[in-house]
Length: 61
Image (tube, rainbow, N blue to C red; front, side, top):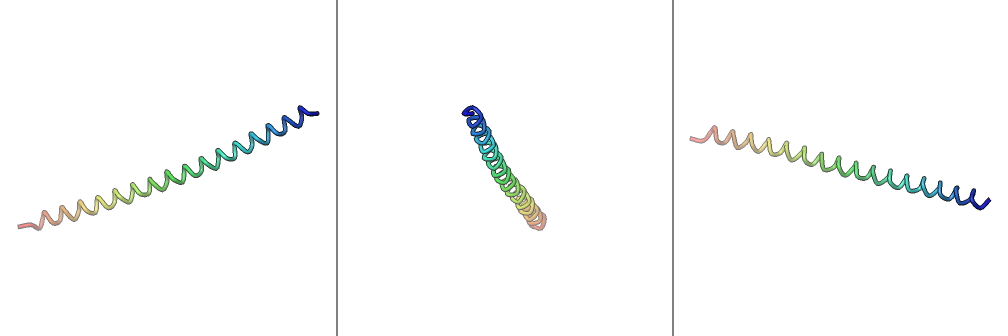
């Protein structure tokens, strides 16, 4: 009977560990998305600055 209890504890530990890893993976995914959004925003800002610089160079005497 002791082996049965030990096996159940192992299964519970495995499930708990798997859930912890799943939670951590989800958090990492959210962090990646956050940084990807920031990169996209900064690229858009760079494009806007490039357009302004181009416009200013085109209107220079």
